Length: 382
Image 1 (cartoon, rainbow, N blue to C red):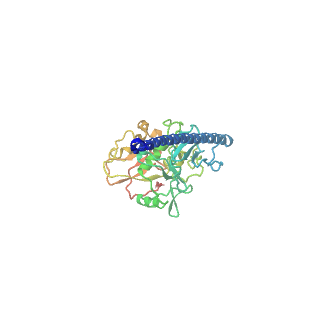
Image 2 (image 1 turned 45 degrees about the horizontal axis):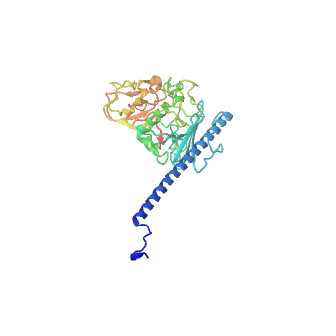
Image 3 (image 1 turned 90 degrees about the vertical axis):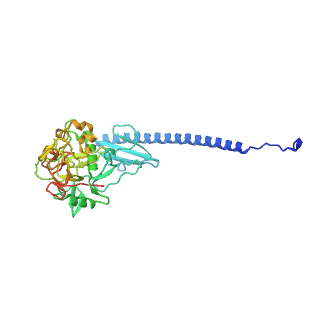
């Protein structure tokens, strides 16, 4: 006890304790942030290193077999460190292509046959690490924000009538002579969640394939023409497909030229008969202010007034360079007239005898919703 009867006051005041606690908290937060940053950088460096190693392995596989493996699991490759690989490959083009996404702890990196590891995932792959699963003989289509689409599944082949069920199958000719309402009903029966392809989905596919150099005769986008399928009327009927994506001229009697029936998406997936073979119903329609001039005619997209059509219909909406392209570039044409009436339902792509009118952007406005015909089919999506 001090003189004067006062006690020693050697402890901390409440304020001092609070200050110490706050300082400790700040230091701990800084340490955690710094540690997490170091951990994240280490994880991402490891992911890039793994992808670089995989890239070398795939290059060696191609040298040995002249193609990339059909699957990573078949090549004995699994993703390390709790991550997941997603793999798209296209060995039907020359040179063959692939893209691999590696997702771990919500972080994604990808490679392809040409590029070093980069942040993100390949077109058509999932940033969650769980790839979109499609029904048999459907393909994954990368979404396009211009058309308000996310990744979706589309029939690889035009719908076939297999025992009354709309089926994406190689064998058989397209399910035609069907009204749009019946095509929509049949599409719903193709799989759980399936529906008739929408206009936005059609445009998403069209602009995607338009951007792939191997779909152009000149090997570069805008160089030559984009392949436009079986459209010369010889033979004078729609065709079955072929299980070999490398045989894109199957059944046409050609082995070169514009009649190739296969188009490749940016993710390496291949779609058959998206242009020509059979016209395909979509969800689109127009009820008034029809485009064009009087009399039914094929019209070039870069010269026709669109009238009441959505501006997104024009090829140049999603691909500005297309404003200078015509059917000579294989885009197809608009079949329309102003002096008509009743709601016109959209059919797309062109038929087996529509020559330059057929193409990935072909749109025919001559059909009422209840019409059916020998060259009028459909395709389902999910």
